[in-house]
Image 1: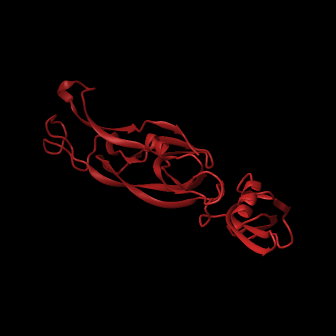
Image 2: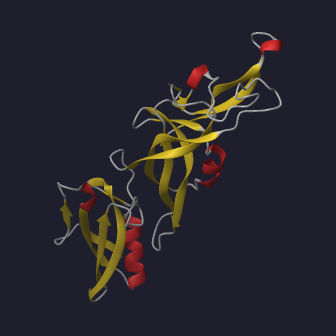
Image 3: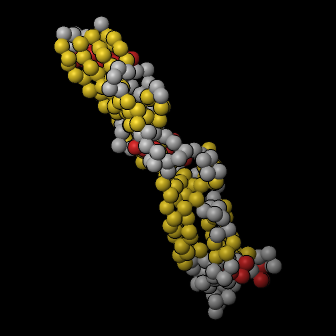
Length: 251
């Protein structure tokens, strides 16, 4: 009892040249077993991996069992790629990009840009200066911030794995990561994950997207400090761009 023949007539492999996510495949198995359940179990045991033997980017998604008489069955396994399947494909060619901006709290005038942030007067020209009379020389009267719209590139990269990524998400969110597929440094903004437990064979699979943000000038925040470099009597408020720390390996 078990699989008598694999990839019998009716099996096929389709390659879509314009959009590889439309690739499809069908494998048919002739099985001899006492019941539909046994026939399905024989085929799922035969499939040591959900990947198609001729195209590992195509993954098993549906299994159909058809009775043909006696103790014999035709079991059909359908393969596909893309997020509609239970096992979406991981690929360096599959990602989403979006150009937008994020709001950053800054202090300086925008007459000069340093580290991707306004830095007028080398850190001493403020949009909302402190006193007296806007000179920002009173340690008790701080300049006030304003909101700058900093351009960013948002990147989503899909993943599919059998280990739960939630702990990794929590531990690394907000850290700076090297994104290997683009060879750029990004901020890891967390991810979205769904879990699928196959009904026939295999472990629970977790799939979703990792979210990253790229800024051309790097990740800096602007703070103000009381500066007495020229003596306490000449003290004044000065803005400083501080790089965001925290590094983690990226995708």
